[in-house]
Image (cartoon, rainbow, N blue to C red; front, side):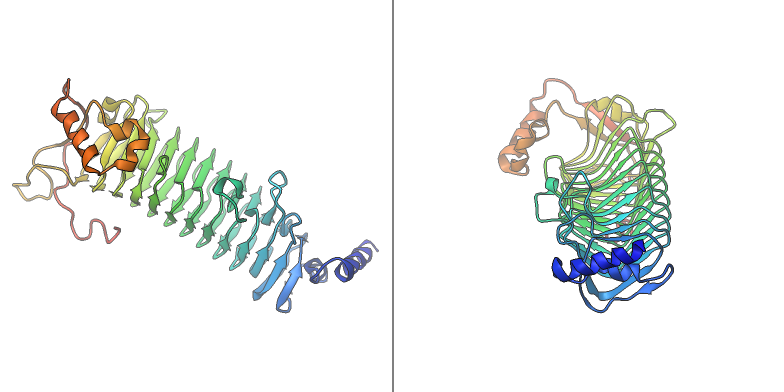
Length: 410
């Protein structure tokens, strides 16, 4: 009886208020486990899925919430959404109006185009889902006024793969464990990935460019960041990666190109919980590595530092000396390789001068590389009042870049 009344109301709405037929009606007529392939066209939302079905739009179906709430809400496990154009959510931040709100497990969301929504996909307490090959953008607003392209809370063991996020705010992950973020593209947004209290996640093979910031990690441990390409983050705070009190993080084989700061990291909380930075390429950054805090202990091996304004900077320069530096390539190394073993015969040392104007006064970065700023830097060295401090010593610097060392990553 209740269902019949509900369908009657939907029919009344479709005849009197809505410009398009309601997708909810077709959902209600689809049995659990069934496949709904609507006729090509434009349908109205919002839609709530309370039992497992597959909706396959085959790239020809639009669901439009007409500015009312979330476009689609999934409350049933084992639901599949595929080939849909999902658009025009509400604009309430308090209610987290989204293209898709996911409150279920083992769902598959793939090959959808989600646009003109506040939040893209909002994942709440949902596990074992697959979100892949979707294109997601927010509403037309400044980055801070958009919603997150992906918002994930208390959700574990999900695969987020091969999605395109453009013109969103952030990808915000909190209290979520053992998820994998693989081969996604994030551009024209604020922050690529922001993980808070989210342990054992993997961020692999993603492209992050033309954002304000790249990857922000806060109180999150046992992470793997591998094979990501992060480039063209040029604001004063435009760092590719920033880590705060994160333990046992591996940063491997990433390309960090043309950013204000490559990696910004504080000291590990415990000596055994360290940051491992290996086989990365840092090139054309203002500062490749920036350390703050009073402890060393990070492992920094086999990286390439090429054409950066500064390779390393630290809030307490001697602290960076206590990191483990070995096998890195430094393009300003002035030694020789007389035994031809591929490594310099003498250690590479990087010194901290008393002042760098463009480091201490960020606004002067506008003039970096100009003759006047280069002259000032030269004078600071020429007329120093004390000997510089040794910031780091790489006892086995790589002597030259082999053809396969950067693997075409520039």
